[in-house]
Length: 209
Image (tube, rainbow, N blue to C red; front, side):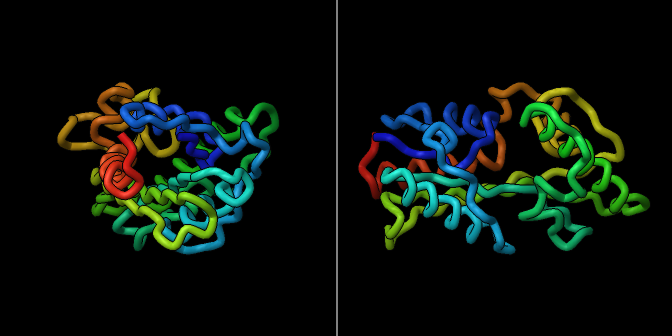
């Protein structure tokens, strides 16, 4: 079964591809089909994930899955939340997409540290919502949630991962997300937790696997 991922993020495709590897599906990024990224005007992860999945399903004619995820910081009332990827103003950087994304990540991390300067409550969580649709008008979207709690450090640690990974310390692992390898991350992350729920839903409702 072909399942279109409503994202053009190569790292997200790789991560979800590994997580869904046990299912008989071909996960294809929407960009490979010429599908643009959807607008994400909503204030909740579930609404944005649904909007992205609907567009991908409608324009591809295939089943689609979307992830909307981000960082929710207690002391900031849940911010940056749905705007995690664009928390800071976009840096004036040209070049390839991944280079621009890296520059945006650095700006986002700098702004987060600035907002938390002098704050003692550093609790936060990575949050992921996955939505899968058989078609754009599917009345029964499958919805899965994952939450990975940790705390924000005062300085970055580690060179792996992306986004806020270098600042997010996971006490159970004794490391930031950027300090663990992909195998460990895929076993513990917010996206892994949401994916585990989604796999169960796909097997039960869509009879996959």
